[in-house]
Image (cartoon, rainbow, N blue to C red; front, top):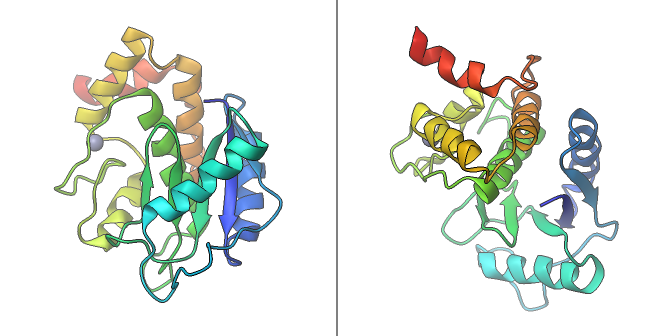
Length: 212
Ligand SMILES: [Zn+2]
């Protein structure tokens, strides 16, 4: 995955998408983020007062990519509530992220941090088979049955030791390169609004807690 195309559905995420694409493209060079310039709307007949099926948005993103940007990876950024009360849904073909309900009351973190955090996991999941945690661990893999638990993950913007071990294994197997891993961590640093020096020393970072 090299080129990621943000596809905005609805009005409220337009500026978020452009700002994010600029920011994320400037802090790392492994992944290229662009925005589909035309704002999309949901297909006719979809009632936005009700949760929208994820497949509706997946199909919209995948069709656009097939028509206009062959080979790119679509990230549909929407503002509607999703069926299953999900924040996001993604696999190796398409991602859907909603900002529905992301208010100051819900989270102290800016919506851009949340989207970047989710995008980091979209990328990581593409290369490494990290699990979903149904019990909240403060990890990007958290399912967040209690939706506010995502704030626990956002406080750290990092993977748990179990996931880190799996990620290291993926590095050893060559399914993810060190440059890709470093780029994903730069996106996480952006999400966390922290300045760190994760460049090409992932092993130091990953093994440090074990040596304590
Ligand atoms: Zn984890």
